[in-house]
Image (cartoon, rainbow, N blue to C red; front, side, top):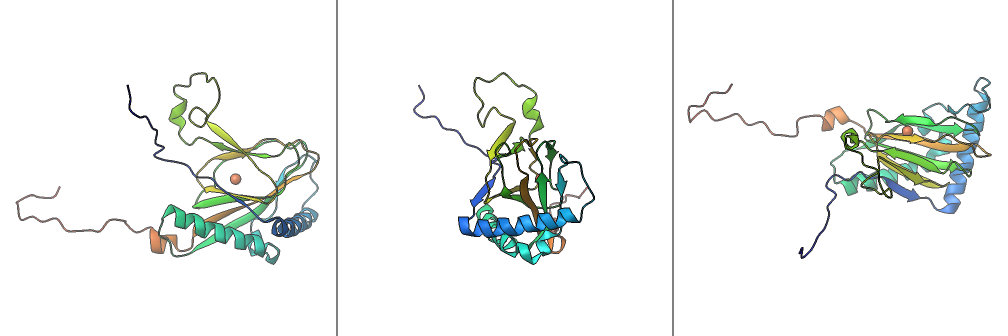
Length: 222
Ligand SMILES: [Fe+2]
């Protein structure tokens, strides 16, 4: 018999969840809803079930300074936890997503050219409490037996329940989607991307050190 069995998870995919303190979340949510109302007033008329996004430079708006600050604190914590070297980072884009009652699903997508992405939840009516993450290993579906009960090892997607005041962050390459929304009020979230500020200058250079081969033993390079 086995004296012991264990399992390792060698390439885990992290999704970081931060819950903002209630008072601060209330302030941020109020500011975000005001920005959304302003943005809607500037939009052309839309069908009532049309999901829409605000302009994507909300990180420059003073009204969202408090949220930006939280994203920066969370990012520093994540980069420290990941143990990666970095000089500085910046929020490269930030926008609100509005899903009215009856809106279609927000299809599966990634956020290219960034390192971390995230969503802060402003207003989550009943029926809109999920974000779905998709397995980034397509080959796992080659053999897909029926399962007795879904778990992290036999599922190709994972739904994270969300709530107002929750800040969720994940690698930008991790595909995600949002189901259609049928709650009574708009589902409102603020998405953002984070990237190293001077990626090419600081981080894109080869990670290995060049050393000229020694030809003393008569070998010739090919
Ligand atoms: Fe997204």
